[in-house]
Amino acid sequence: MFACIGIANDGVSVKTPDIETAQMLIDAGVGVKAPYFHRSWIRLPFDCDGEELLHRLATSYDLVRASLTKKAQAALPPRS
Image (cartoon, rainbow, N blue to C red; front, side):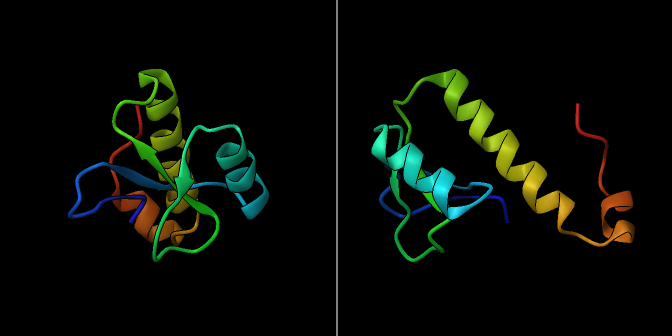
């Protein structure tokens, strides 16, 4: 899982490379701590900058995909 939309439907939670990056984004006001997730996850509000949202979703996807086995990665379609 690389992204999660909760029942409140007020944003999307995404994985960041590390806790420090998540904290930097929180401090900059880009997102907030994602409740119930590891500290390397943040929640981005749906009304945030569209480019930022796309970038964070792509980064989260790439991080999770890279953690999969080579066989699992090969079964996924190429990222465009």
